[in-house]
Image (tube, rainbow, N blue to C red; front, side, top):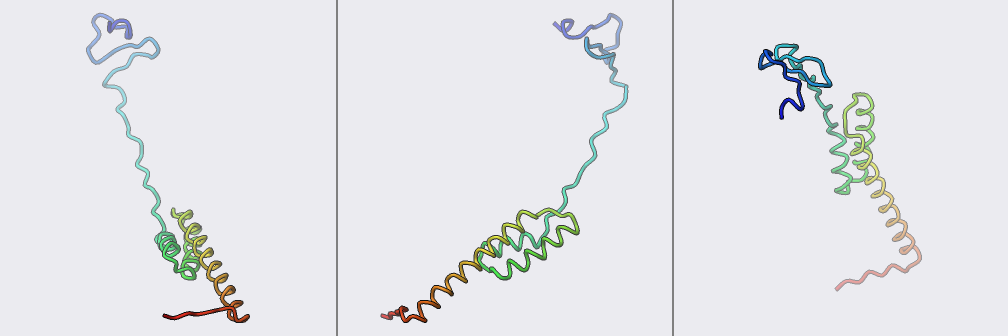
Length: 119
């Protein structure tokens, strides 16, 4: 069965074989050289902080830290750009919702339609 896949010649050492598609190979030929280890660039810490602040609702701080982290990522080439952008978006959305809330209650208070009931 082995002769079907490899052409084994009589007298060949047990560490040498020929394959139909390839030339003769030997276990003593060039040793395997492993691929170089490539380290992943680290994630920018401020990008992580931006995302956490955006999720927790610290909107103004998230926006400020987000722009600082994007600037650092551009200079250093670190990872975390997507996290910083998501944190910025959450921060801006929070600021927009807060501004709309202020406008709504400002109009309600100015027109006298704001009723506060206490128990």
